[in-house]
Length: 252
Picture (cartoon, rainbow, N blue to C red):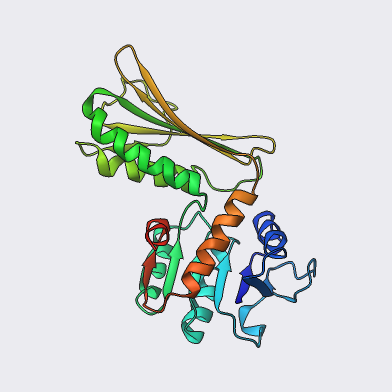
């Protein structure tokens, strides 16, 4: 049975992971990390990972970008694999992740849903086939408490599209104030925030007299929690340092 140290245990996603893990026999949470140290499940909660005296098999993070330095320090010192399910990192933080991955296994994904990763594959295939003849627009919708925009998943979709298009695509995040025709080589990204929307992502391929749409809708946070737990169990068995993602897990 794999022992998981859960960072962000008292947040929305952390609670979803903890509830899901309570019914599993192949993994359990030995301790939680959170600035809110209230004990809501049957494991202790610490504000600092160094306060935990045990040794987990893997650390799973569903917290906030501000927690990254302490998590990287802890995992490097203890030589522990780390699953990063948090989004919203800036370039300096992402550089720190890459540097740490030279020493420990790190799994990172902007979205832990298997359905979203299938969508990414479909987007790559569509871009390769449709090429220059279709404009690409990405629309993402989330609840009104989400801090980052566009979402990490929307950025993943944008990168997947750009990798497969036959031209150098340019992401455009906001057309407000622009008075110009759309550049045929741009990828538009649009963020909607409202209510309790768990997560919806659509990719529009708008061509001459036809539109193709690929979309994914999450009805519950459980889909992300299940994917994150699957990633934690996968990474717990990885010993070689490196930066891993959903493609690596699915191939394994």
